Each structure stands twice: as structure tokens, then as C-alpha cells.
Length: 339
Ligand code: AMP
Ligand code: TRP
Image 1 (cartoon, rainbow, N blue to C red):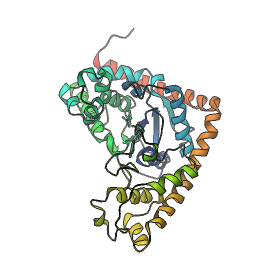
Image 2: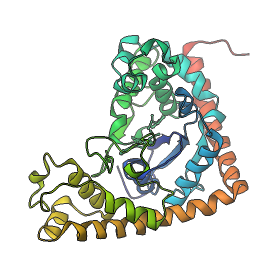
Image 3: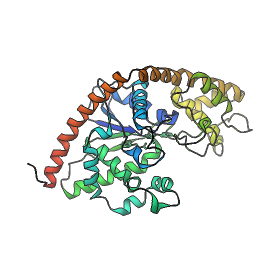
Image 4: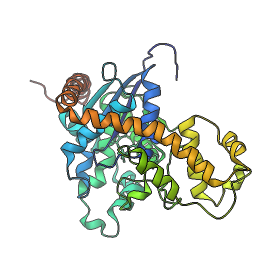
């Protein structure tokens, strides 16, 4: 993507307001958004309708919505240029989701691994919304005719589906109506793993708070979590290839690399003869430097609800305007009655 002046790209992404925002959300998604906003038109959504899909994520949505807004701003998203808004406040998302669902074969949804993971054994009792979740996600993206979507690795399959749905719609109605959105899954931390188990994704819903660095953690909490982070009994690796079969170490080095914008090879060569404790100490210093700044800024912002709400109100208005314009054109193409 170009860097000079704002180009005709429309970057769109979102986070669910489900509490416990963590380092994975920051490194896999939000950090990349900050870099994108200087040279692109960007829209960052708080996807509260998605949070309705499971009973765990349905609680405290209002408070969590403000928390995500605060995290966006504290991480460096500038609400003057970039639109920050709440999904449920732009009705076009649900409307377009319905229209797109009529162009989405059930077979495509049956392939979605996230549904299988989240629905668990009892699929018959899973809510319909959990199943059709990826269609709503496609609607989020396509409603604004977005061209690029920066996300973590876990959203790859959903983005593929969004592209398929856009193509299906274009084929049926008008070939160039939707741009086909490009995923942006970049950096060394597209999949940050749990600090307790290097084979599990760092996640908001992990019952162990020790498994993740929360964006709300203070410096003491961060230091403790890194000190206790699982490692193994082998010395610091000598080569990148040595990381195979050492998922916890690989994860910590990837986190270091993403935070410091340094290559994994460089980090390995810096620490190869040193004790793990030194690496962990430097990693926790780095995290404290980056994350506790965000955490303290979030706390300040969360005390000022009026300010946060005014940002969201402004974003909702701007998003609604764009959404309505595109939806009107889309309904026209379909041939729906307009009074
Ligand atoms: P969610 O919390 O599921 O709404 O995710 C918001 C964003 O964070 C999405 O772009 C995810 O892909 C990204 N994300 C979530 N967990 C991780 C993780 N462990 N590593 C990297 N990215 C993540
Ligand atoms: N499904 C995404 C997640 O769980 C969140 C999301 C919803 C999203 N709509 C989106 C991300 C549109 C990017 C674009 O992380």
C-alpha cells in the first residue's frame, strides 16, 4: 500500500466489545491500524452485534464498548481523521447482512472452523447468529466498499468468505459493485499465543488471566506475567529453525520482535549466549514501555465518558452517511421498491 498521500483505499476493521482486550488484539490488529491510518482512509468499528452471538460475550456490552473505544484512541487512532463507531448504531450492517445471506450458500458457512470451535459438541443448540456471524462480518466490510482489512491470523477464513460473497454478489448483479477486500495479515505477531500454553491462542475468554497481557495491565502485573510465562529447560535458541517444537519460546520472541520492530534473527543473535532471565527482563521492560502507556491513557479516557461518547456519536454519523449512500445504490441495483 502507498505511503505518500491518502490513496483511494478504504481500510476497515473491528474488535468485539467482549472485555479483556489483550496483547494479541494489539499486535495482531490495532498496532497495524495505527500505521495504516496516516496514508489511508480508515474506519474502525466496535462490533457489538457480533458480541451478541455467545452468552459469555453478551455481558457488559456497553462498558466494553467504551473500553474498546478507549483502547483504540489510547493506542494512537486519531478520531479526527479516522472513523471510530459502534456497529449497532448503523442499521445498514444488519440490513446488508440479510441481503448477503441470500447470496451465501450454506455449504460455505459449513466450512467455518470458528463456528465449529465455538459451537462445540452441541451444534443443534448453537444460536443461528453464531452460524451466520461471518455473513455479518462480510456486511461490515462490504457496506463501506472497503478495499483492505487488517486483522489477526484467526480471521483469515472469514475474510476469504467475505471475498467469495462479494464476488457472488458482483456476478449476480453488477460486476464491479463491491471491491474484493484484501486481507492485511502482517508482522511477526499475527497469532499471539497464550503465555501458559504456546499451542493455544492468547484469548479474551481464557479463564486464566496469567495466559494473557491485558491492555489494562499495569507495570507490576506485566512483569509478573512475563516472569511466570512458560518456557522450557533448553538454553536460548541459536537459530530460527531451533524454534520448531518450542512454541512458548517462539511466541515470546515473536512478541519481542513485533513490539520492537526487530527481526527474529537479530533478537536471537542478541540473546544467544545469555540467560533466559535477561531476555524475559528486557521483554517485560519493552511491554511495560508500550502497554502500560496505553493502559494509563485508557484509564484516563474511561473516566471521561462524555468525551468518549462524543467521539462515537460523531463516528456513528459519519459511518451512517457512507453506509446509507452505498445501501441506496445497492437496493437500486437489486431493484427494490423505493418511495
Ligand atoms: P476479537 O477480540 O476476536 O474481536 O479480535 C479482534 C482482532 O484481534 C482481530 O483482528 C483478531 O484477529 C485479532 N486477534 C485476536 N486474538 C489474537 C491473537 N491471539 N493474536 C493475534 N491477533 C489476535
Ligand atoms: N470477527 C472479528 C473478530 O472476531 C471481528 C470483526 C467483525 C471484524 N467484523 C469485522 C474484523 C470486519 C474485520 C472486519 O476478530
